[in-house]
Image (cartoon, rainbow, N blue to C red; front, side, top):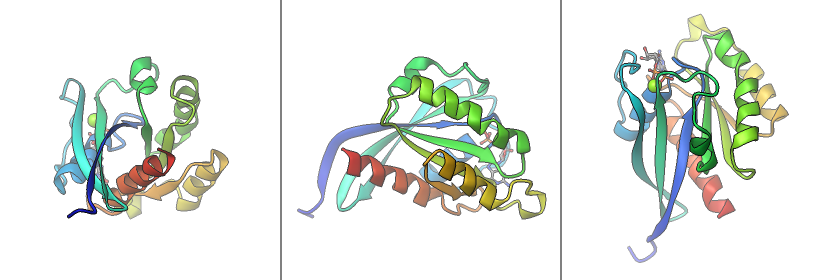
Amino acid sequence: RGLLSCCVCCWQTILVGDSGVGKTSLLVQFDQGKFIPGSFSATVGICFTNKVVTVDNVKVKLQMWDTAGQERFRSVTHAYYRDAHALLLLYDITSKSSFDNIRAWLTEIHEYAQRDVVIMLLGNKADMASERVIRRDEGEKLAREYSVPFMETSAKTGVNVDLAFIAVAKELKHRA
Ligand code: GDP
Ligand code: MG
């Protein structure tokens, strides 16, 4: 269709957060529309997936980078942050430590990422209601404090996964 123009820009989006919060699973769910149970920690290095999404009739390409294993603080290279246009910052709603570490991740992001980087906070594993330890309003409160949008997602059921990536793409497009 004539209305659809192909955008030449390719936005680098990276997923960050403690090991085990579901970064790889979220990426697989967004990319392939399925949940592959089990940890992906055996994967070595940093890999990326390209995905074209349509925002306001314009196709934009998201190049999404995922860190595999060793996601401890400081292990993510500064270059990785520096080149990022957007960051999906994840915690696991069943893990208090992953939530508590969000502040440290944000400190690191503010130190190394570009000033205008698009950040979105995600509380993942929303399907695990019976094991929840972080209430939704706690996530919302933290997000408000840092003025970033927030959603709860599930890489397992797919809830809000597409919405989260599309919201990021929209924000990138509006800022471009
Ligand atoms: P990463 O280390 O952040 O990349 O986390 P993984 O994607 O490897 O996921 C860690 C573990 O959590 C794996 O066993 C996944 O199957 C599981 N997991 C990830 N996301 C979800 C989710 O939304 N719901 C549930 N129930 N399990 C999840
Ligand atoms: Mg991973």
